[in-house]
Image (cartoon, rainbow, N blue to C red; front, top):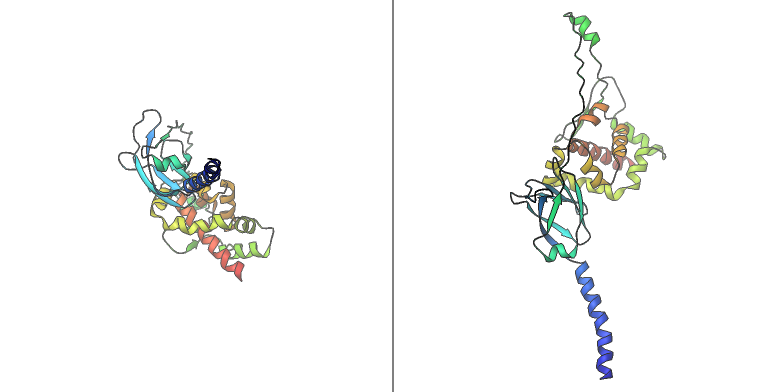
Length: 258
């Protein structure tokens, strides 16, 4: 009897440990439903991104989505008019197929827009002089491999990045050098069609900051140091900003190796 009890005392902790280990390693396709927190109605076309694995998808007409995930991954959900939400993947989300994730609606207040029309005289020579000068130097168009410069001559992105490497205190070196794992996500983000579609429709940098673990000010500083214009930084969509950061980072890596 004592031997039996002794064996049980030895085996129970081992079995519990094996079970716990099995639970924490659960991974594969995760299915869940996204609903409106106020009405409980399913939400279609909600963008869902696995921040750890850099995978994206959208919900169907019934609000359901399926995505590759593992326990302890973080899912980021965003939908126009609703507050974005991060969800931590648990064992129960794999065990049960009726997992619901509720998003809360946002109330938007439109800011006042002041329109200042140009005062034109009808004389071309005078009107041209009165028009505001665009000081933008570099433009980037998503889908094209290179950026373009315009306006007065200004140092190119390569010159800027080279300066960053030669100066150890420069912001570019600090940001790129200290966050190699986040920067490596750039290529994964560019290859995922769902993520690209999401970023093409967004202008708030919110998804980019979550994916890259950077602050908005860091993103602006990177683009400033790569010589992108203020108008581009303020008006480009998130996909164009992603492509611009990626281009700058690739140049940085090449020059840094040299």
